[in-house]
Length: 214
Image 1 (cartoon, helix red, strand yellow):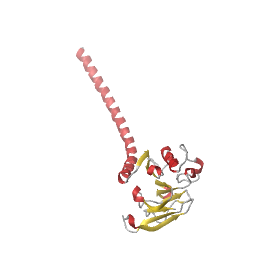
Image 2: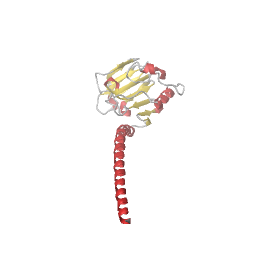
Image 3: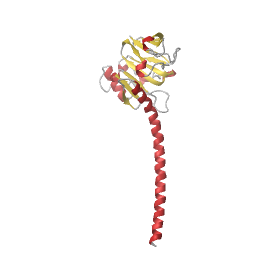
Image 4: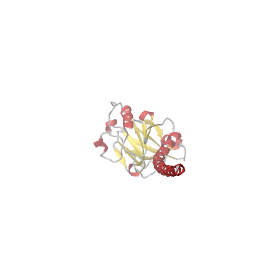
């Protein structure tokens, strides 16, 4: 009787452990699948961080340099475009533009176009470059003048720009290299951005390597 009951109990325990094990495997698979989605974006960001100097990850999909002087935003998983600036990025944007802490994006102004480049509320001088046409892919943005040449290679963005948005009052001159891989040869004019203008595509696609903003 005791042996029989023990056998029943053992069989019951085996079945229970089997079900629990299957459930664990199911949960683990789901978690791994979710982690893969997350890690895909993180791997991209880690690659940029490892290949550049001074970058800091400030949110799920953004890297900042110079405490917000330049910010690189990535599309979230499943999205084609980088979203508008996160709260973390907006705090840096307010600081760079010398605005009160807590200044936020002007949603109605941001909705006037689909570039998601920061609005005039953050100093009226933000300008953005995009990985793909129609403001798709990664968005790399700056605030302020740059009389000295800024090289896209410092942000792993060289030979990548396919569209742009200039929300500010600067004239931006974008150049390309005349010798592959040599930033010192970045002197071939690709396009000029006038104040308060934008372009969903460029003729010289994936040819931009540096710029000035004056």
